[in-house]
Image (tube, rainbow, N blue to C red; front, top):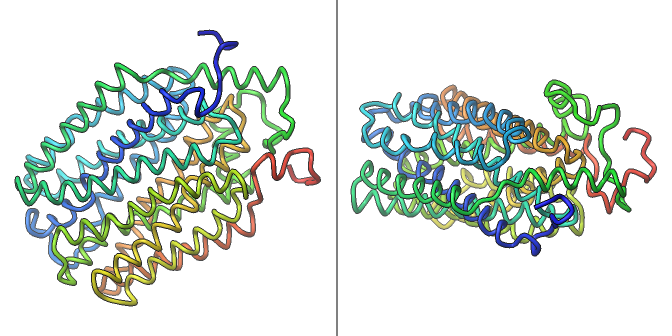
Length: 435
């Protein structure tokens, strides 16, 4: 297939979009299988003392640090060896994870399994996102990201619930083993048999932009060569461009919420007397609302822009986190989780879409990889911060307040430093001397 015959669009590439959505749901299954059962097993299976907040958060710190680096690597690799190969190797790395968890004699093995999970997620989730952006049009980016994250986080939520039941039926370790192996093998087969490499679409988009500039040109950063070095892109994403800095710091801080839900929310609910299946459903509400709402919030940003959904989403999610410790009972916790999830749905696909809006297709894979590096480093920094907060105060509630306050401050920074990135609503030919 030549670049002249490659078409961009969700409908034009419906079969590959469907395959990539299946892939990201399986990626969500892979991380979701660790969400409910493992934190709840910490005391009963591995002897972690109740209140060992930093030790409990250690596996999320390890995950975030590794996934952040692999996001960075995946973006650059994918521009040289293609998206499909990176996806394939991400699934190969995942193969030992269920076996390590099943055989784990102590908590250090869980941390080791989570390191491999970070590699898997960094390679695979990055590629499902980048691949769909390759094959869809600029005006569909919000919807595309919404579909991607909807599929992934519904997978996370479903896996948390399914593994809770599997743990009750087969035992915690065996349930995770059976579920994990099935997910990874299915993903590998589907990758080899049906997924196409989408790098040619990205190259075709670059060629088309050169031949005929778009009517509403994006607000690309100035002063970079057509193919910048990794260091140049990293500097731009991290501090040189204030818009991309604002987006990257917001991505980092919003992961504090997910680190909290993963590391301490189940343990907090256990101390409040909730059962394992109740925890699965309460945490599942967060994932379902986050995932399901993105079908709406991603498409919304294609019409109203990225700026306000991102800023308001930061504040709503922070409010949902604070609500958890302001009431009691499964219903209250479920509502609070839903509010936090809806805030995440407003910001999550649209921060990524904003990065895609203002980075050229020639190095968009690298830009997304670096954004995802900062975003998922938030797992490590957030887990460390909330673990320290809870340990210093001696109560899990302190971790919730740490995360809520961080979200409000980060949202304010995003409001102050960022701008609308949608090329139709704020094209490069509009008056703005800074871009």
